[in-house]
Image 1: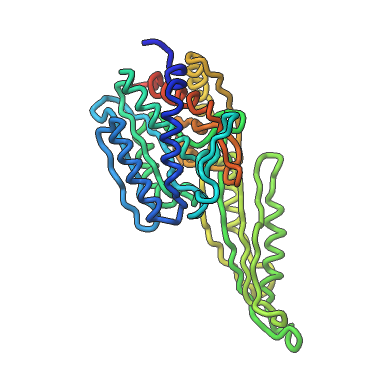
Image 2: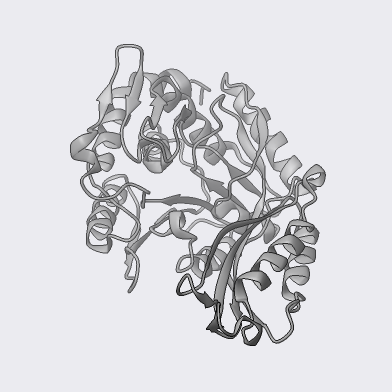
Length: 385
């Protein structure tokens, strides 16, 4: 077998573009379940067409259905698990305003193209190419397409954890950084809402009888701000505040929204405890903490370093230079990495404009990233498998 995957996939760039365009033309806003379900059916059909032996559509109640496809189910050893999401941040009708467009300088524009329908396209194209070339490895390959990553992966996280616990490697098909690096460190994210109860009273006649919930919120905001440790990568941000009922009433309610980001699991636990230990500061006020969403950090630990080193070596064998970088945003890779499962994130296309009107990708990166994905699937070595 020759290591000529890159020219092979370069020759098939138009096929990859065609598949990507088909995916982008299915609008799939996270909360538009009927639309996302249509894309799930399409993804299931493509998995079958590309040789999957087992394809399941996993029905969901509140979000779009998931798709789980498996290749080489009878092979020995731990599977490689590939994770992609089919939901986007773009509301219905966006595609009519901004259809898929390809410029003369090799840029493809389209809502959801970079984040992350290109990654899904790359994963399926890599598997299909290996099958066509007779180079599919004798190990199970599983692909899960979830539909709620952009809104926190609340429904899909238990499934991801169950599948990842059986896997020897997880590939996350999120886009790479704008200069093409893999993401070997991601901050953990935790969000909270602090609900504050005071007592209403007339602001003119009986202000002393009131318990001002907004003043309590302000004092809590100051306390929370003191938890910041930006030098060490920890941010605690009060990002929204709401309260009061009328201009002449001492407010009896308020709430503040808190966004936290941390680099280590230890820091995440410390901040969570500190926020959980908050106490009222205005006499008579009551506070109640709501934990909205938590995603652990992807730490740049020994497992991550070893995984990246192997990916870099494999890439070099196929003519690709692979870099690594730390980023602030989270992905489903945070979940699998925190479980101790070797995880490679950012294997999708290279481009710019995530969640922005100018979302775009470099067409040249499609063949390169498909080559990298296929090479990792083909060459990966882990103990006991």
